[in-house]
Amino acid sequence: MIKALLFDVFGTVVDWRKGIIRDAKIIAQKYKLNFSLEKFADQWRAEYQPSMAKIRSRERSFVKLDVLHEENLEKISKDFSLEKINEIDKLWLVKSWHRLPAWPDSPSGLLRLKSKFIIGAQSNGNISLITNMAKFSKLPWDVILGAEVVGHYKPEPDAYKKACEKLDLSVDECLMVAAHNDDLKGAKEQGLKTAFVLRSNEHGSNQLSDLKPSQEWDFVVNNFHELADKLNCEK
Picture 1: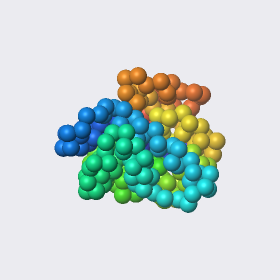
Picture 2: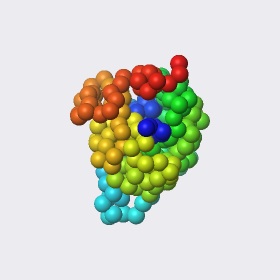
Picture 3: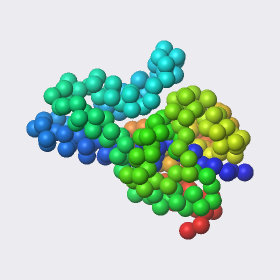
Picture 4: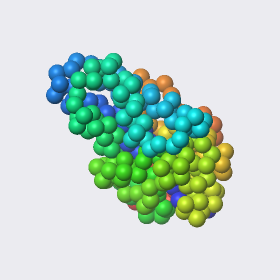
């Protein structure tokens, strides 16, 4: 019996690309910089998985995602002339990940799901990041789990198992909700139930990945309201 829903956040609950483009535009205008906002967002995000890989492989000790985001911004700054911006604005840009907008169905869909289940953020984002994002986008989490809480970045097995343990639930009492097949694969391998949510514009109009389920998940839906319907949540 499902008792808790654990959500991937970046791309599944919030539109990270739209948020990064929005804040990068403010910086570009302030400093009169001319670069592709879309390319900047995509290139910054492209550093996400490689930076976590070193921690997953134990090549590096665990650090929170804010640290990785700042390091990754430094890595790509010269490509966009961002080495010119001052430290206050650089920190503000790093914190753009704390201000990501929700997909239109997320706040109301999560409320419906919350009426019947524990809902938790199971993100690679750190606690302050996910908390600030929740305030910004009105995301009604019951609990914030994820990398900083369990000490592991998804899709490491312990990222899923320890999240369930924090709730005193067995893995088969938890449903992982994500727009990414690799995340669901990691969860399923640990015994969690799975729900694929299609976010076909996460990477823009030319998205090539995660446009369909890669295997049989327990649920396949187009948005959170459809998932709420399938789980018999109140309207």
